[in-house]
Image (cartoon, rainbow, N blue to C red):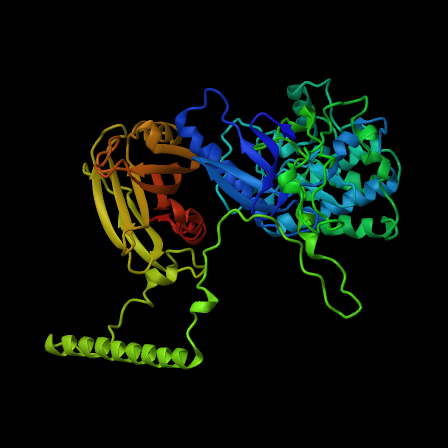
Length: 602
């Protein structure tokens, strides 16, 4: 075990297929978690995997794979012989030199630039998530609470993710999370690196620290080459923070010369790391069993060796690590593939790669060379095979033409619907959005309450259906649906007239109308200056709601994003519903394009 946090443990593991050591992140299920939240916890782990996998940058840890054990996902990452910046700052060395701080700043800024370009906000930039390897590499790790801004957030209202001393003010106060939050985190990390203390620390009290972050003035760094950059990153207003491009431009003249030793080798000695201050800060990766370690011809090949230093896994850095904890455990064992890197000899021939040992599967035995046919026999066999194939194809074609002729159909292929609007809209996630058409609707209820006329733009070919819903868990309403030709995607416009229903009451009653296991509220945020709500929820639709549909308990899983808002004519709900596997498509190509076109006309 390399490290453990509140929601996960990181282990050293051995990849039997590639014969290398890796870091394996195991997700913990905290005691008392309701069954309906287990899927959300697993989804958060998969989101971490997607976030890291979307990045390909030398300053970001490499994700190798995601494997499942039962229902639980495990994230496989590179194993890096390193220490976290937090462990270095916590040791006898209280602060970094200018050269060290500049090197760290450039590496983290470069990693963030790549993440933001991929639409990913890290959200927990702090010294514990910056790894410094013994070979000079610097990597940003622990995207366990990273969120891709093109995906729906899974953070519940009131749940704060991140480290209080390094969290951005707007995030601490519950505001929108943008890439500017990472700029603050970078500034706070550089402040800690150059000052030897975090920018905010109210005696270890998280609540008091968060209060000071939100209400207090940004700390001023000591005069120095990085003071202006740190102040520019620690601007209270998110829009005023120094952009990453400008940060890197200012850092460039301060970078040490190539080849200059910035972090001395003594930092990575066993005695220099594990001795005295924090005995648990470093651990030794266990030596491989003899059967795995004895690789013929692997001397000097870069195979895994015992005594490799594990990255910082202290409990202080594991706190607030989202899905994983164990900061610094993600790491690099890719060098194990260097076994074939021997230099070419004078004759220009490269040495073969070393034997990797027994494979994890048994190769299928091929035919014996003695049983191979002679060349002449082989030619005759090829001619016979070709003739059989030709005869078969002619028979199939002739049979098709005969059937089409007898039945009175044309022999030409049917026109098909390959170019229909539905297909161009992309049921499988294609990036071509379908053109929208202006449609009219009437949400006047059964009692004749006026004020229900509206217009909205929807994809061409969607059919309209009107339903008068009687009171149940929710009050009486008029529900107009525009449904795609295949029935998979729906725009719903629902009006509750004269009921005095608020947005919050609607969400509460909507939840009550589903069984607990079939409804998950994913996101809720204020709109229309706090008078309305935008919600995203997932449902499992069964033949008889709350009961198995007779097909082994399988259900149709859907995702709905809706705007809920009051007007002078009642409470309106404008929603887009799609299959769960089209959630991103539904948000980008449907909801974000359709719902803003909704207008009341009376």
